[in-house]
Length: 473
Ligand SMILES: Cc1cc2nc3c(=O)[nH]c(=O)nc-3n(C[C@H](O)[C@H](O)[C@H](O)COP(=O)(O)OP(=O)(O)OC[C@H]3O[C@@H](n4cnc5c(N)ncnc54)[C@H](O)[C@@H]3O)c2cc1C
Image (tube, protein in one colour):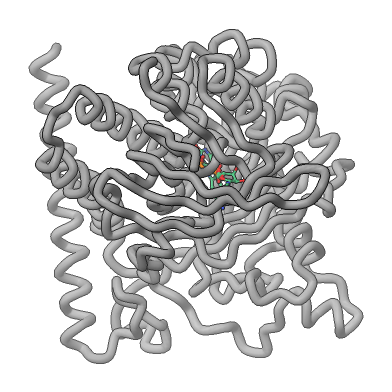
């Protein structure tokens, strides 16, 4: 039976970066990576934040790869619309006017993951690929693993053992599922659909031809993560270094019912093209429908990140929401903290209390982040479907082309506008934080009280900012 100090399941971002840091900082450790895929998947086609970019550049020393193979990112940009908006020129826009000061990147994940894994191997990690973890038996700093290793003669089964087993299998959550510690987060019922597109128009060229739009900005808009915002959904547009563009939508399943579509590709395209500014960008572009991806429910979280001799990294532990691109931040934080703890244990330290602290910190961080965001928007208010309202799929079956505005495509169950609370709209459906329908006047009053408190907190934040500015002046 092969013995290793650390076995890592999954050799993509989380697994490979953990291996790189372990080998660099504790070269005496024997590290094995087990990766299922013969070639990495393109995944979403992702944006780093400035934090995960810092991890890639300053901690992992990946500047060369990032400059040669990936695109720089120019921050976040948001486009809002109402019924008067016909394109980018008259849409409300929020985003940096000048270039970003802190580096970040738009990533082709398959290219990055291959480079990270090759680096881990170059720095001394061993690799089994393609190989798939099949069974595991956990003991205190003593785990046994059954692995299927692919080779030309077929799959060979190997038994391995290790002091530390790290799960970096992403949404597969190999270890977490076996331990029964992964919980679906139903308080945030979101789903996502995306694919890569070819020949998306360059928004900077559009701007250059339109004096008013061009004058509103100096830095590149195309290199930003462009968001097209609406009630119950947001859309990302991320340029990739190979000329393709990742375009996808994240939506609240209580408001938008794209997840129920029986013709997802067509409904997805119709949905995107129903947003005038986005339609302008996609004019003449073609979606790679062979690449159409769908996740029916995004968020989940583990109850425990680490035990004596095992740990969960990145998406193998938790996922909340891709808004602001925090996925690789979380992966970087969990890798960094786990590597430090394994290093301490390798030096003979009793890490029992550190493991407890690790669990408290990471589990609390997920819930704090989520609850913090939820505090800002206590209730989700939905309107009932419009009278005689049909969805895009139904319209197509009836031989009519879906109308252009997303509100009218029926993929929205409500108008893309805030709906006032209270008795003037008695038919409005109010969902409480737990997603249940608000039942009585008492709950509505509680909703109003929370809103008023929210407004008070916002006013007090604004006055604190004012005071700070005055003090600085
Ligand atoms: C819609 C959407 C948009 C997103 N956008 C962004 C973004 O813009 N920016 C960002 O930072 N993050 C984004 N994310 C999150 C990001 O994709 C993840 O956080 C990231 O991929 C996590 O990396 P990982 O290495 O933990 O897992 P993964 O990248 O999923 O890698 C897991 C690896 O484990 C391997 N594996 C699985 N099972 C086994 C097994 N049994 N044995 C061996 N190997 C196995 C797989 O082959 C794979 O290589 C987004 C996520 C979604 C859903």
